[in-house]
Length: 479
Ligand code: ACO
Image (tube, rainbow, N blue to C red; front, side, top):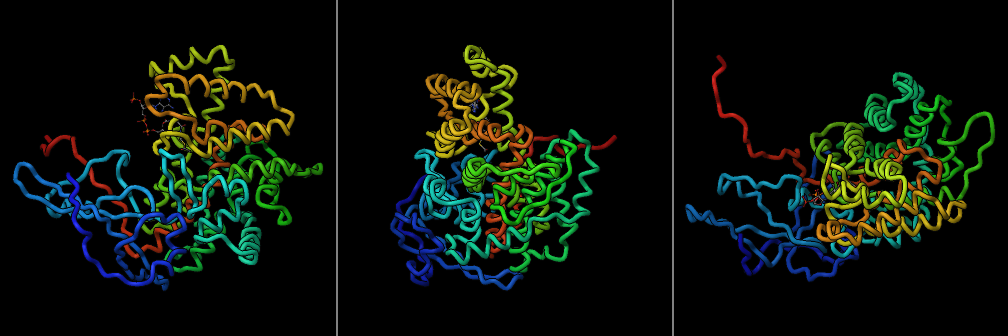
């Protein structure tokens, strides 16, 4: 495949780009020569408009055996690498592309989140994560992810009001927990209960109805804390605690986790603030494994609760959101700074598949900006909680320091990711290991819902159906 410096293919140009800058985001820094406009509508009554930019670069694929060539057009986003449209390969050459794990494949177009892995940049709808972490809050960020713009005061009030009024669980739903053993992992319970929501809200799961989609979005963001806290209470054998609508999102989460009917419980504002910051950092991360799972499941037209439940299950894996629980287990097993070299030797030997959990990322190859914020937050939160000398934090800092000087990690560009330090904060807040990934799921629900909404509104949405390279037996007879 080689690049051709052809002029961009001429396509219809329609509309003033500046008028649509709210769609494109402020991150646009590149020249924007040619735009194509595709209008269309799905069964729902919203008219979707999609803007694509043809790049100046074209590529040509040549079959060296037959000499047959195909020109492949390139599309540019507002920032980030171009993508080669290989949609015609099968038609023109009868071949598929092969990219296990999507190392070089963009599965969709999206306007929600941008990551530059080399620069350590993360933008939600164009806004740098550092600024949102400093100045925003989780519900405002959720609104931003869902709607594409920061809300004004009235819009935020209305959004908060709607989320707050959807926090309760149907009593029949609450009874489902009694079917789980007391030591069931909370992620298993949360995935099952989320999937069950479709049985309770069947009358509002028409994915082609804007209002149904909005109600679903608010319900998921509102109810996940209640569902998660109930899973925790079930494990403890304590009564479920009802949500309190006078509390903010994260204070209410802590109230439902830690209060009991027999004595008053006051939420520590510092704990709520720390949780809110973690939720902002975890709210979205473009086409990560769980979000892609939500999109893939949702592309079948299944009810949206089923798609979110699939996302919860995918998040649970230790290579993804399950890493925060695995990091704490790892730190406890290492136990002491003196054991770090021995542990790292086992990691580097790749003996028994041991990995340095909380290290490495498919996209970040320099640093994960979320990890930088969380490490700093660890210092502050632990100091304020009187745990400045927290031994696990000291161990994590030392482990990071040693690993970052080690040729194995340097040559593979392995750095701490968001989950290297998040578990230490969760633990300092009194949240048990088994709930770490559940907390992540609550935060990521905002991103899942935003991506699901974006996909359903896309007039070009197709069922996600990858191809394969078949290496099994050829046809044979049953005898
Ligand atoms: N410890 C030791 N070696 C590692 C680690 C690690 N944490 N991560 C990657 N490597 C090594 C691999 O063994 C491989 O080595 P090789 O070139 O000698 O074969 C090389 O680095 C590349 O690793 P891949 O697995 O190919 O990288 P990939 O992009 O597929 O995986 C992943 C990324 C899954 C995050 C990986 O780094 C990992 O398993 N990390 C630990 C789990 C973790 O922290 N996950 C959370 C990610 S953030 C999130 O999802 C919220």
